[in-house]
Length: 164
Image (cartoon, rainbow, N blue to C red; front, side):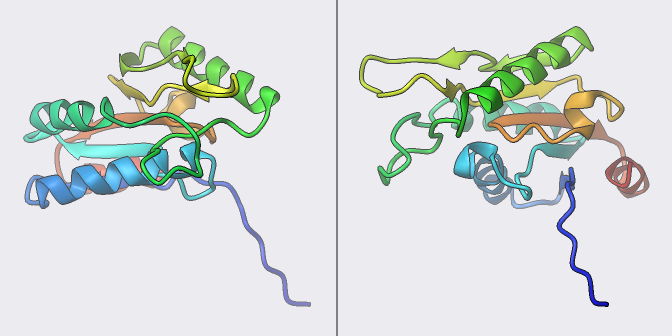
């Protein structure tokens, strides 16, 4: 009997020092914030080679901080609302867990509201550094606009971390 399974995952995006810097930034941004990170293929775990780590993370935060939050039907919106209240609460819980496990929130990490936006289930684009691969934020699907960044030294380490 043929069987097809769609299983969860935390497949990493991996950025090496020889990557096209700006293309990698834009790929990371669209990978995590498209559909507010609420897809099985959301790029929520990012591995960055240590030689470019600081520069890459700084630029990533600059670009991500400009993400427009709002109506997902609007062409210029980057991050829309979370689908349900229980999912919103789950995302906020994962953010709290990440902080309690020692990850450093360098962007976002809060609920978002604005008089210009209808609804109350918005989460700021959120980026964590100092993430260890064994942390829940790196291993469990969050289904929200939450990015975990892990530093690696070389290809061998990237493969090892990526396969965990």
